[in-house]
Image (cartoon, rainbow, N blue to C red; front, side, top):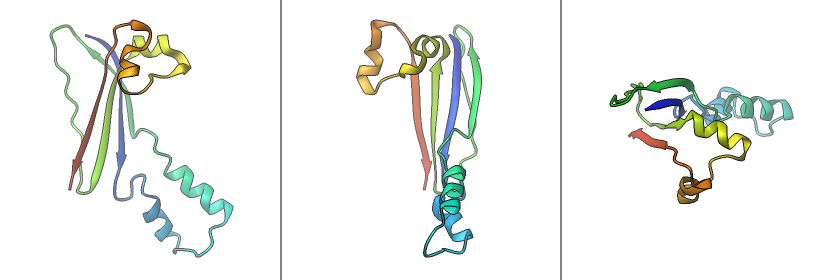
Length: 115
């Protein structure tokens, strides 16, 4: 139970797809700095969805996402209280992150793909 931040990241056809955007540019042999900047900005890997989620005691949470062929989704659900305590220091990685500062918190990640 508690408040969470839900983030959904997506990579697939024309979503964080730098190659498709390169082809739309006409596959230039030499990219200008402006073209490189444009590709980097459009395909920055940022979350496609970020939203606040409140889950009540004894309740479950569901999130439906539309998944097309050859797409990969990463869905994260982070406890907001823990995120605020961490500030800019981050969560850590793997088991080290789960033990960080000895406080109880939750982070759930799901990788979803259809091929």
